[in-house]
Length: 507
Image 1: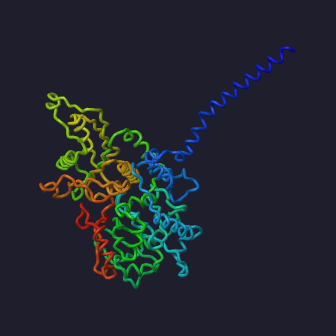
Image 2: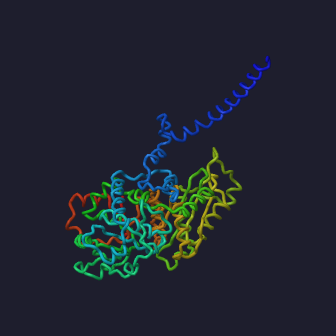
Image 3: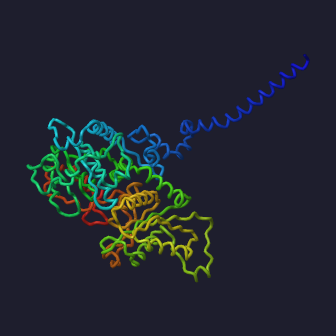
C-alpha cells in the first residue's frame, strides 16, 4: 500500500522527462519554421537594407502563376543568378496580364489549322509566328522583337515547335505558345514575302523577312504598310536582327513603350525576365556549372571572343589575343603578370589576402582560353592575386545542332552572372549575355582594321546594356507622322551603336 505513492511519483517524473524532451525539440524547430515563413516580418531598417534585393524579388513574383511551378524551375529561381534585381515595371506587368487573357481566349479550344486555312472575317484573333534563323543569340533577340511587336499589335504570339527554342525555353504564359504538331507548316514555309507583293495584294498570311540585307520587306517600316498589315490574320516573323530599338521610332508605339520601359536602356533586360526562362534540363546545367566553378567568393569576369569579318571566325588570331590582354590590364580588370626574373628578384606583397578572380572565357576557338590560362598560371600577377580561368565548351565550328544550342544557352546565362563583361563587337551572343543582367560591357576592338588603328583603344565601355539594332533601314516615309516631341526624345535615347556604325541602340 505504502509503495503506490512512490510508483506514481516515478511515473510522473518519467512523463515529465518526455515532455521536457518534446519541448526542447520544438523550441529548436519552431523558430526555424517561423524564420522561413516570416523572414521579412520583423526586421530592423538596417536588416531591410541588407536584404533589400531579395525582398524586392519576393514581392514581385512572375506574372504567370503556373499551377506546377516545378515544371519550370527558372521561373521561380532565375533572379537569384544576378546580383542586381531588375523587376518588371508595373505598366508592362499590366500589359502582359492583359495579353495573357487574349492568348488564352484565342488559343485554348481553337483549331489553328482551320484558323489559317479558312480564316473567319468576324474573328478578332490575329496571330504572329516566330520563325528562327541563324545562331542562338540571333534567335533569342528576334524572339524578343517578335513578341514585343505582338504585344503592341494585340496578336497572339506563337513559336514554331520545329526550332530549337521550343526545346530550350519554358512557355512564359499560363498556356502553350507552340503551334500544334499537326499544323500545316508548309503554309508558313511558303508564305509570300512582304517584299514580293503589293499592299493591295495582302492575303491571309504574309512573311516578314527582315534580315541584314535589302529584301523589299523593309517597307514594313513605312506607317502605311504597317496599317495595312493590321488586317492580315497571320504574320510570320522571319528575321535575324534585334529590332526593338526600331519599334521605339514608330509613332504609334513610341508613347506606350516609354511608359512600359521608363529606363529604355533596360528594355531587353526587363522583358527577358518574363520571356526567357530556361527549361529544367538547361537550368540544371547552368546551376551545376555555376555551383562547381563560379560560386566561390571573389570577382567574376566574363569574356566572349568572336572574330567577325574574317574568313573563319573560329581561327585563333594572336594579335587579337594581345589586344584582349591590353584591354584587361589597361582598364585594371585584371592585374598584369610579371616575368620570372622579376618575380625571383622582387617580393610580391599585398597587405591582406585577396579573393581570386574567376574568368570565364567563351569562344569557338579554345586556344584563347588556353593562352589566357597559361598566361596567368605560369606567371604571378603584379598584385599577387590568383586568377582562375574557366571554359565549358570548345566546338571549333558553329553548327545547327540542338546540343550546341544547349551549350550556347548555358554559356550565355553563365556569362550574364559576371561582375564585369568583356565582349567582341557585333556579337549577338554577347548582346544577350550583357542584357540579361543589365551589364554595360567592355567592347573589344578586334574586328577588321581595328588592330591596325594605333589611335584606337583596346576596348571601350558600352553606353548601354541593351543590344544593338544592326541595319535599322530608315525610310523617308516615316518622318511624315512624327511629332516634334518624338524627334526630341529620339535625339536623347536613340544612339548610334559603338560597334556597328549603321546600327542604333537604346540608351
